[in-house]
Length: 192
Ligand code: ADP
Image (cartoon, rainbow, N blue to C red; front, side, top):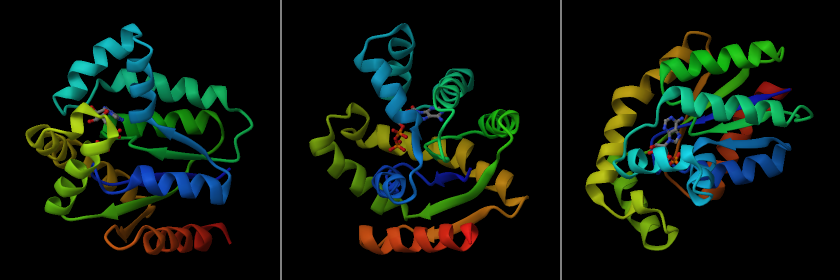
């Protein structure tokens, strides 16, 4: 099993690159943002709780997302590997993930960290908001709040994995295909 964390701030291209990577490597895509939006669409109690937090640009509680990831791992026992997108977003989430993977006799193979400047992030998210139907993409102050949450709570997750030498920084500005090729070459180097 080869498991990847695609890491980076909101708007860094994780969703776009995830779609290409899961096709290329046959991985199961686990996006906590997508899982939460599906709960919201189905109007589950969890979705109703998460929606107001997400609309403020804040992180939903660790136990909520860890619970979703734990079930998703259990639901895909035959997976060749997982691509985590938008998770883990706090150190507590990364510790919980390490533990869940250890129970399945596997671990994170690599953390691919997409790097994009803040103004570019805001522009991309505002642009996405024109068509995505995502309420958290239409308001600049919510976008800035998400980037602040990333800086305060999520960027330290990279340090957690850096201790075991698993983090690779990848420039996230350029064409989608250029960035995809950079990500693939980092993965291929670790698979061979
Ligand atoms: P983006 O990376 O563009 O912000 P996501 O779809 O990954 O978009 O996340 C949207 C929102 O969902 C976040 O702002 C946050 O409120 C919530 N969320 C997603 N993943 C997590 C997580 N791992 N922990 C806490 N909250 C999360």
